[in-house]
Image (cartoon, protein in one colour):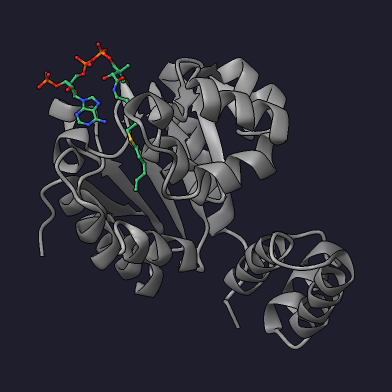
Length: 258
Ligand code: HXC
């Protein structure tokens, strides 16, 4: 089925998902999040896809949840539909890597969506913020939790309590983004990173993602054990034999996800 609020292109094992509501700076409405959840589910299931890149436009990754759509919601509406819970859980459950390529505004739900991805590459034009406080609400899809883990309590508190934006340079310095690149090069850099990931063994890639994400959910000793067992398990794969033989034979490894 075709999408109306996003554009999906699959090329060379990378699914590029572009948020596409330019009239509203890619504000996240129900239709967009439903479509995004569907696209990510399909990409996760599609054997040809080995990495996902999520992006917006030059002006905005996403300027937050759609305020027009939210304005008249009641508590009953929000609670009964678990407002954006089901869609975001789909994104969080994706086992394949998702890179956020962020230019322009990533505000409110837009910043939260970028933080749901596995890492963020930012254009030098990127601006991050959690300005929900100006609307009489707070973040609702992970901002208070993920931003705090990424940049620490003090900065997270300041951003959520004052609504101030963080520019790309500060975002990199604070650990919110993995790196900043010139806006013109954003998509080339994000696609090159994705391409690099597609060349690895998916078994190792998914194991690394799983182990890193567990670190947010568990104690250090449990996390270390989980990592060690995954590391041990990878010795049962052909890709481990191939990767190590290729190194010793001084050639490129050809992984087969087996
Ligand atoms: C709906 C939005 C929108 C949004 C922008 N637009 N953000 N529509 N929801 N979040 C629309 C504007 O109404 C306008 O439409 C068009 O996009 C262009 O926006 P402008 O404001 O004219 O652009 P500009 O002056 O450049 O200002 C850009 C901006 C500003 C600084 C990003 O638009 C802004 O402050 N937006 C809201 C940011 C925000 O508060 N986000 C948090 C939302 S709450 P028209 O039709 O007038 O041209 C949230 C909760 C998350 O995210 C939890 C979810 C469960």
